[in-house]
Amino acid sequence: MKNKGANRRNRIVFAALFAALIAVSNFIQFPTPIGVPIVLKNMFVVLSGTVLGGFYGCLAVLILTACGIIGIPVFVIPGGIGVFGTPLGGYILGYTVSSLCAGLISGIPQTAGKTFTLLPFIRLCIASFLGFAIILACGSFYIMVLMQMTLKAAFAAGTVPFVIGDLIKLAISVPLAHSLRPIAARYINGK
Image (cartoon, rainbow, N blue to C red; front, side, top):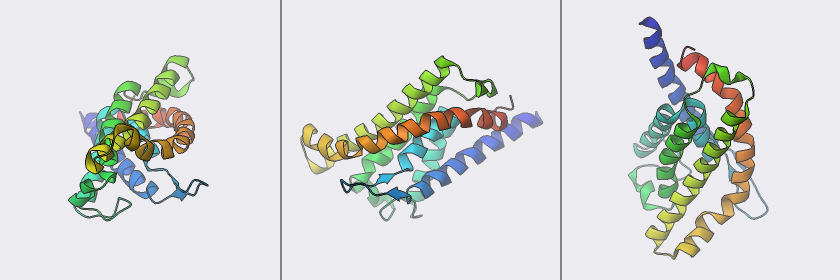
């Protein structure tokens, strides 16, 4: 019984830790020649799902979003509920769905994942790819509705500039998630 309570506490601590990592990563930017910087935020959103699983990865994003809504500076622009009146609002909504879906596809982490096996690695690749794609799709759709643009124009504004950066982050996040999952499993599953 004591172990179950410790595991629950550890899961919440890990979710809060990922919320903090997502918030901090928002301010780490790498300039690019096309003028759109590569920001690590969405990589940590996807990692929250692939490392912690669907529920606690999504909880991490919900903690972050709640902090932003009450005015804690965790978004690139000033927070508060008004952030959903900007194009950024669609990406923030996409973070929750992305983390949940990536976590559900990759599954709950197990310590048995220390050794490399092809099927779990492929699941991580699919989960991560869909996680990044969901964020971009939600952002583009939100831009389309908010700015009353065509789908093609919204896709050009909300997805195309971020594809190369997201592919780089995808290539980094999959092996990173594969390495972190067994560590997280030891603390959040007790197995």
